[in-house]
Length: 180
Image (cartoon, rainbow, N blue to C red):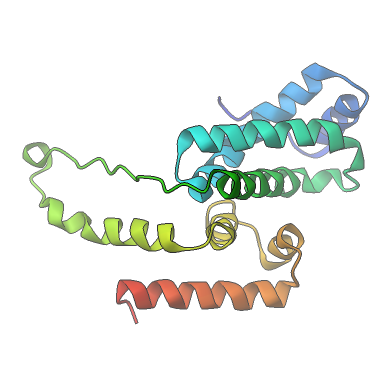
């Protein structure tokens, strides 16, 4: 699904029409925000099928609660937060370990040593060992681009508490990866 850039007054109008029951307007909102929601959910779940399931659940919630959105300009962070919460809840329900598949480039085609990808594998493994809430926080910050205020709203913490938690997570990852 390709994101359709709608924003500002056009987005506010789409939200108002969707709240009034206009399914086509809600479809435009979906097209504009589905991909970022899926990326965040995938980073939390580590599984595309689970991420898709979480995003579908998030859209159902968004449809029901769209009328409660008081600040339409914050729809992106609101939707991504719902998707992240659904991904975490899905992981809790499934209580399963996922297998991360890495696709290595054809060595003959690139001429590079696959051993150079060890750092990528180490990072994937270190992220997999984090609690889903911690992966969600990192994904919201570094993939969705949330600032500390948006992160605080999404996680129910203060902006300063969120910055401190991020600093601890990054320090832990650096230690595990030997990047002190």
